[in-house]
Amino acid sequence: MQQLTVALLQMVSFGLDQDANLKKSEEYCRRAAEKDADIALFPEMWNVGYSLQELEKQNLWQEKAIDLNDDFITRYEKLANELNMAVVITCLEKSEGKPKNTAVLIDRHGKKVLTYSKVHTCDFSLESNLTPGEDFPVAELDTKSGPVKIGLMICFDREFPESARLLMLNGSEIILTPNACTLDNNRIPQFKTRAYENAVGAAMANYAAPQINGHSVAFSGVTYNDEGKALDTCLVEAGEEEGIYTAVFDIDELRNFRKYEVWGNAYRKPRSYSKLVSTEVKEPFIRNDSRR
Image (tube, rainbow, N blue to C red; front, side, top):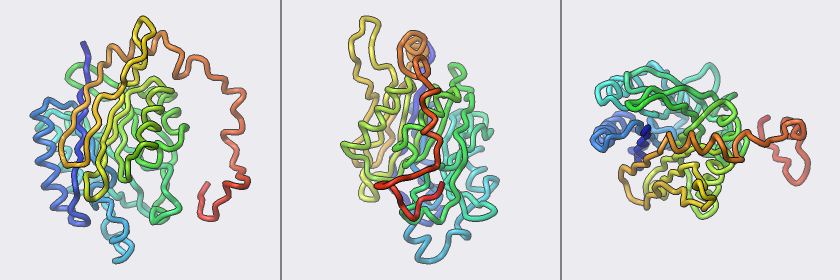
């Protein structure tokens, strides 16, 4: 049986203190490895603790942005190799223009296999200081029990069905989602739906209270059994406190489910969807700060 264990690292950060964030999360990664995790998943923009107000107040956007070869990133490469565990580390990434909100998947051998920058930046907020990403790549991750195709999206991305849909179309079996906002009775079912409608597993790591409100969560993507009985797809939902919360995905079960069920890409009608790629916006959805 092929399984994938994802450790959701639900933490409170030390704000802009990158060294303190690194030290704390290294301990969490070691504890995740002790739980036999295949992947450790971080909250959004961990190197600066998603401290956007402080970045703006002190005008530190460029100063606190890091290159993907920075010691902060290479430390996780070494740690992943040491622990034989993949890591999805997140950061404010240095860019030619404005910085990016980036997640990097490092495999258990310490190699970067996937880099993703948030496409749906929150342009109505201080994230207008960021450069949006442009696509939704997928990578095959080597795990101890076999390869798994992994896709990434970040926080606000999950509020657009197109994000998870494109990841599914690009081959993703599991979608991993760093987060940094309140997870409530609207956003958690929304995330569950992303897994359901695309027949993918989905896991999300959030900041713990009091920084945000925790509730890191994961859904299996397998919604019905062989007899057509609806299944509880929730693998784990954390409370508000700090901790390491593990979700175990049955990859064999997911792959078998995708072979015969109706979701994902089985019965789509792309010829009817041309409006989806139109850049036209009409009332009541016109926003002056929106970037296309």
